[in-house]
Image 1 (cartoon, rainbow, N blue to C red):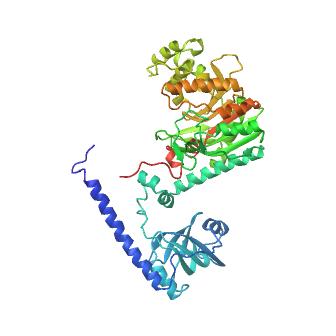
Image 2 (tube, rainbow, N blue to C red):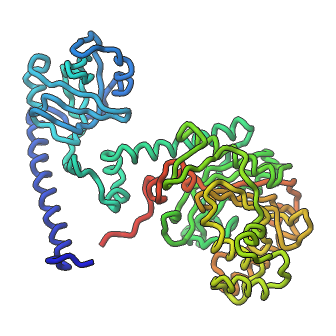
Length: 509
């Protein structure tokens, strides 16, 4: 829509006006910076010793009556978020919360009062003084000493409008965190979720390990990698798309029966509310286990993460209540497709018939696609979006699962693999890991044929991994969980950019 009176150049004009306004405010703050220096104040000191936080003080003095003065002298520090009566009343925010500062000639010397007059919103200061509660009930520090810790040269967004521009929030996350408590809360919950997962796995005797970020062969997932070059060795390397093959090497080598890695991965794919080119996942492998064991582990990890984030296993997302209390249903991919569409893929014997069945639902699919590709396409098109409550989708096609063991039910088209869905999203992926080196080589070679037909996401043949399997790897269950999507659901965040501190952004200009 084009608004009346709007022209293409007006946006640029507004940006120029905003820049001039910022420059004007910045110049005023630079003058105050010089004035502080003239008073002998170092506006960017090396260190400051504080002994209290706002939330701790509020809790400690919860019973302090209005108008009551204590004898407790505290030293606090934080950012000025409100400044009233020429600095007489300051709202100081630290990482835990807010406390009021009272700056008055009865407590501050002449130098201190002069410093207060040169303070602005956004400045970082330290305050030493006595705790009291005002007659209006506000916990307050009577400032006896004010120390400038960082003079802010740029103004914060307006108090009543806040930081609402989405692009600015993601590009200048530091500003978003200053202005929006919900952004701070979301990223703090992310940290708690990861810590809870790590703690649980340590208690289950999993060994945390680190595997390479630079791979000579991109493997462990079907994805297009980022490519870089190592100058000293003069070789091409890929940024990790998954740690799977290196983690399984550790199992084959007997480092431990249980290993895990909370890892950063990189995939050269598009951006969407659920996709960022770099993302965090956890992958774990357990010797002598299978994909059924991984189901129980996935449920435990997600429910523990929910409790760490919100204190219970029922969460709100997008207007839905999602109940993460284990156990969760197990449904076969082919069974759900049959239930939704009436198409029985297990009764379809050939790839051409499967492709025709997919096209009958209006799905575009490559002419050389296989039976498993057709089943997956119909599942994604017809079923995925309806999987709001957590459910394990079991028994995947072999055609799309080159690292999973063939199904013990004897159907050669299926493997022992599941993906966990909630809110219509894949959250977890797990296998009974393929340990037969001959079968693994055949699967890799099939993937290479798909690459030759133009599938850039098909996996490469990793000869060294096959060699590791030839030395013997025990039966193993493996599980991967996407941390970012899990945090999205547990914090009711509609886009992945909300839960990644510094998401990938298109360059400005």
